[in-house]
Length: 102
Image (cartoon, rainbow, N blue to C red; front, side):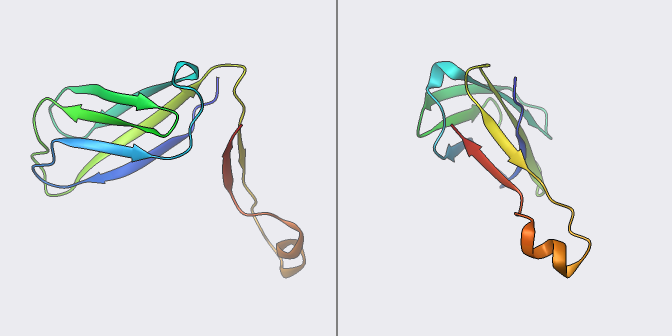
């Protein structure tokens, strides 16, 4: 299973989080959400256009964040390419980090 992870800023008193992106079929991915304040997280909506999560308690911190991990089924490929460029010559041939859902 592929596990791309991202961190998202959450405003104080925010009650939900909407993630909009091209994603695989909703049956082909799962979501793990870990906020940095004491709350529960539940799924409101999930589609191939994104998803919306709700919080049991609104964000209580000025510097709130939510770590998201997307799990995909084995038949869905998520390609993550990273390059560590060390010289200007390598920079011409290396591609930047990218994430593609197929």
